[in-house]
Length: 190
Image (tube, rainbow, N blue to C red):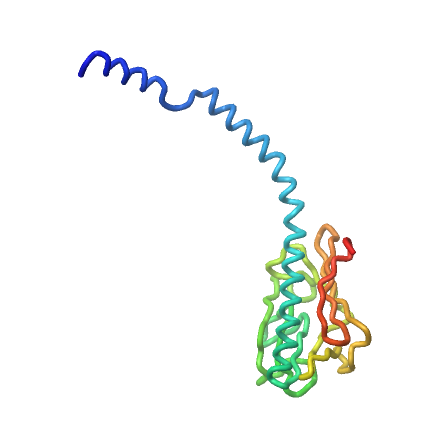
């Protein structure tokens, strides 16, 4: 090895890596950025869960309506309902005997898993902090023509609002109109 090559290797070795000061400055910058980002993220997460829960409920109402039309059988969504010994947030099923209650032998299309606290808590499993206000309306069904009826079996007058609320009191409403039209509403941003 020549002298100039050894000198170049020594210079190269001295320039490799980072100094302790550079590492500490970099870690400090990341800590400051994390301190700014984490509170913003934690405020965003409940709203995201609420929107996701509203979209899921909206999609399941659409599925109930389409299934009723396609199969020519009344299709219902019943909230806080027990099927085969387990409590579910809601159950979507074909209501063959038109009583808006799942009975043995009726086809279950979807069961929305309940949480560990039971149905009476009103909180949705998988959507921490989201609750549904369905105390006034235990079930909604769609007739084979796509028209919705309430839990008493009569046509829904005007519209029905199924409200979802999170821990920060953000709200979303899944609205079922008398024509069967569905809509997600953000009451905070009309």
